[in-house]
Image: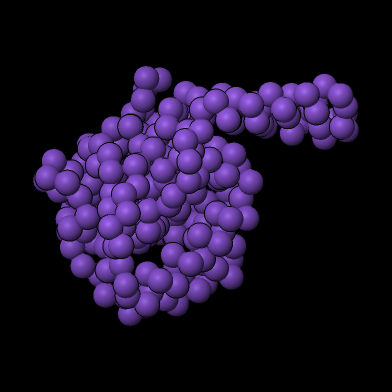
Length: 226
Ligand code: NI
C-alpha cells in the first residue's frame, strides 16, 4: 500500500529545517546502501550524528507521532533512525533498487524494513525531476509531494528517484519494522480501521461498532509480532 500522509511537518518546522540545513555537512550517500543499491545511488546524506540531522529527525518523529494515519497504516514496532538526503548538481539520482531487508541501529539492534517512508523537506517548485517512482503489481507510481508531506510504501517495492535536473531535492527517509510483517495484512487492517472510524463518526458508538472494534483488535492479535 502506498499512502500519502499530509502535513507531517508544519510551516514552523519547515522554517527550522531550512535553518538547520544552512551549514549542513553533506557527505556521499553511498555508505548507507548495500552493494547493488550503492552502484545506482548518487546523492548526498547528512551524517547520523550531526546537529542538523538530529534537529530534523526529532521534528519528523514528533510529526509522525501526531499522525493517526501513520500509526494505523504502518503499525510501527521499531523505527530505523531517519536520515536526510539531498539530490542536486552531479549527485542527483538513485536508480532502481530494493532497500536492504534488515538495518542495524547504532546500538546493534536490528530493524526489518517492512515500510519505507519519505518526508519531503522542500517544495516541488524548487526542483525539476526528483520523483520517487515506486513499482508494484499495479504499475509505477510517481510521487512528488509538497514540503512537509510524507509517503509510505512497502519496503518490498522496487523504487528509484529520477534525476534532479534543476534545483535541489531535500528529503528525510527511514524504515519501519511493523508489528505486522505482511503488506497485505497491514492494508486490510488499515482499511478496517479507517472504515470503522468513518462509521463511528456517522453513527456514533453502536453495538456493531463496538463489536467491529473487537474484531479489529482480534485480527491484530492474530497477526502482530511484538
Ligand atoms: Ni531506497
